[in-house]
Each structure stands twice: as C-alpha cells, then as structure tokens.
Image (cartoon, rainbow, N blue to C red):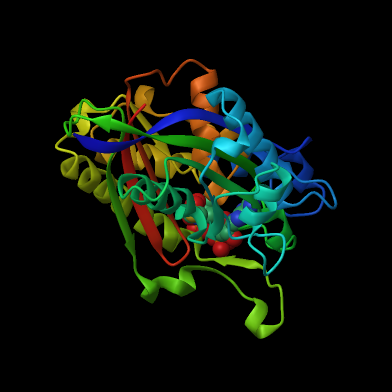
Length: 323
Ligand SMILES: CC(C)(COP(=O)(O)OP(=O)(O)OC[C@H]1O[C@@H](n2cnc3c(N)ncnc32)[C@H](O)[C@@H]1OP(=O)(O)O)[C@@H](O)C(=O)NCCC(=O)NCCS
C-alpha cells in the first residue's frame, strides 16, 4: 500500500471588481486588441481598497472546505502559496487559520511566485505521504495589483488578483498510476535568471517595489521548461502525454499555454483555460483554473490532471495527479 494525497474539495474566490482591457486604454498607449492578441487576456479582477491576500485566501478556503464537506477543525495543516502576503509576518496562512476558527494544526506560507501552488502541492504531498498530516488545505492567493507599476504597459495589463484552494486527504493507494491523488512531482529553480522577473523592492531594502519583467525572455524559457517539467513528472509517474486528460497550466499567457501543449503533443481541447477572465494571478492561477474547470464539468473524478507553472526565480515545476 502507498499513501496518496487525494483532492477532496476545490474552491475559489475572485474580488468583485472586474477590469476589462479597455480600462487601460484611458491611461496607457495600449489597446484591447494588443492585450488580447499578445496574451489572450480580456479582463481581470482587482481587489478593493483594504481587501488583502488573506481575505481572498480565506474565502477560497471556505469554498474548498464546503466542496469537501469538511470543517476547518478537521484540517491538520494550511499551506498558502503567495508572493503578496498581507504583512512581512506573520504568514498569511496563520491569518487564514485564525479566520477559519482553527486553533490546532499548523500553517505556513510558500513563496515561489507563479510556481508557488505547484511547490505548495508538493509540500502538502510530502507532509501527507510522510504521515505528518492527514488533511492539508493548500491555497494560492495573490493581490498582484499591489505591485504593479501602472505606468509600465508591458506588465500592468497582464496581472490580476484572486485565490483558489484544494483540500487534500490521505488515502491508501496501490502504488500504481491508477491511484487517485498526487502521483508525481517535479520541481526546479535556477537563480541565475533572477533579473528576468522580479520585484525591485522588499523588506530588507525598506521599499515595496514594483514587478519588473523581461517578457520576451521569460516567454522563451517558459515553453521549453514547462513542457520538460510536465514530461519529467509524467515519466516519474510511469505515464506519458497520451495518458493526460487535462493540462491545467499556470495562466500567464495563451501563447505560452498553446506552445507548451503543442510541444507535449496535446490538443487544446485537453487544456483548461481561464487566462481570458483572470489574467495572470501568479500562485492563484492553477487552483483557480482547477476550481473553474471542475465547475464547467471539464475535470471529473478519475481524470489524469497535469499542473505546470513557471515564474520569478526562475522557479518552475509540475504535479501529476489523478482527480
Ligand atoms: C509580455 C508579452 C505579452 C509581450 O509580448 P511580445 O510579443 O514578447 O512583445 P515584446 O515584449 O517583444 O514587445 C513588442 C512591442 O510591444 C510593446 N508593448 C509592450 N506592452 C504593450 C502594451 N500593453 N500595449 C501596446 N504595446 C505594448 C513593446 O513596447 C514593444 O514595442 P517596441 O517594439 O516599440 O519596443 C510577452 O512577452 C509575454 O507574455 N511574456 C511572458 C510574460 C509572462 O507570462 N510572464 C509571467 C510568467 S509567470
């Protein structure tokens, strides 16, 4: 028998304010047509003033717990992937823990930018498989609107705010790829590429800073590294691209998503796409897409799902799981 971390619930939350591309035409030399054709993005959500990452995360967590039919006191651990925590410390995860009324267990944040949710899933899987936790709430939540330079048209039109969450629970599997749950993980980072995507401020420099990106360079790395990490994870699971029911990619850019699917030899009908409605929500994008994909009736029990993401670091990775 093999311990498996199985998804028991999924949910998401988006802030109320929807901002269409046309909004940026008022203040920047840009157009709806340029943004759509270069990125696939049509609109995104922005948090209201005072609405923080832990607010979004708490709402997504409640939705995932409802979907799982579980209460917060049944959860052993919360892992929250974010690069935009409310405060330097405590972690946003502990804020969510308190808001959910959880007085036991433990909670912490994971910071791997857009790859954050994949890293968090990997950590949750390790906790479950090693017996340190039975039920883990894994959240991706971001307020990237807070780190946008609104005068930089090459970045501020691409990002959005939101949160998604899954509840994982330990189950005994047979050790074969037919098991439900997380089957394999592949994580990577290469700090030599830090200048391609970063925020030019932080606590230790006593500034907040804004997101800076060499978009075309990130693009070049993305397609190659994402297809490779997804294939590595599939191989570790004893599977291949032809076994995949759904790719649930980090939603940064439709052209990256298309390029990755093509490199993997998969048709776009097997890809869950939400980038048009959410923009790039960094660590929130994959759990948002999982939740929307389930709501749409795309992802069903028993489906083989591959999530893959890349972001600042560079950090990238993939998780293969059976829903
Ligand atoms: C950002 C991105 C959409 C730009 O598309 P691109 O085809 O690479 O475009 P380039 O960066 O080469 O820029 C082409 C031109 O468009 C301009 N441009 C940039 N943003 C623009 C905007 N919002 N509106 C209009 N023009 C814009 C550039 O200034 C440049 O003009 P120039 O040729 O006069 O200098 C694309 O590179 C991308 O998506 N990269 C990956 C980014 C990403 O997903 N990052 C997150 C990973 S987690």
